[in-house]
Image (cartoon, rainbow, N blue to C red):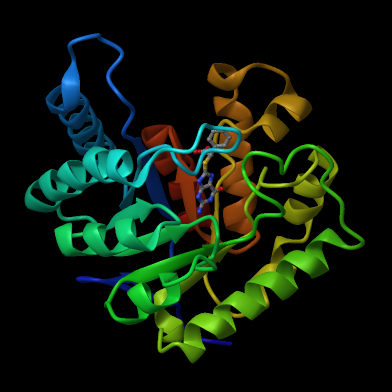
Length: 278
Ligand code: 7PM
């Protein structure tokens, strides 16, 4: 067993002895007809700064192209959404910034603008993505997904979901290492809700220890997801309490980073875990 786990990402060395909170910063087009880029950039930056004030350890900036079922966003549109936000947060914050994208061009531009982590729902399978991360000092989150965001929830199917997710993450970790990404720069994520039924998601939470056995820090994203609604009821805005339980359970089963919308509540809940678990 390692004495402690370090996550080396860009300018940062995170000591993952206590669970860390990654706050979600979505950069969405402005709903006002004349809002324009200036307004959506400022809204996202202000939200990111608020999440830092609430105790976020990391910010994850996304331009929505990776959301399941969402209409894909063009490369230029994604760049124009996320790059100004990364630049502004880089200048005004002292927490690692993550870019949520599967496009190598966005990864490269975001790293140049100050991103420390690449959060990739496609686990660097896009042509050129492994090279972009290997030729940088960024950390990377490799996530499991079955299928594509457009079709993955139609009929998710596994013989053994835990074993298959574990094998995929192990293979992608080795691909990254073979390209020159140091082990200390890699975290792994089962990808809750990405080509998984409620039963698959529950099995993955129950057996999170099996994924931790790979030996890399685990990141989990369950915040506001439908599995919470299936178990506890409620629409997206009514899943905070079930989500807090999920973050606590995940942290107690070995997750090192939880990706959430509700930062303050999660920080408080995970302080309990950190103190009680030592
Ligand atoms: C609808 C369903 C909208 C799900 C948005 C989502 C993850 C992620 C997302 C995750 C990592 C959301 C998700 N989920 N990246 N990006 N892990 N690494 O809740 O679980 O934002 S999109």
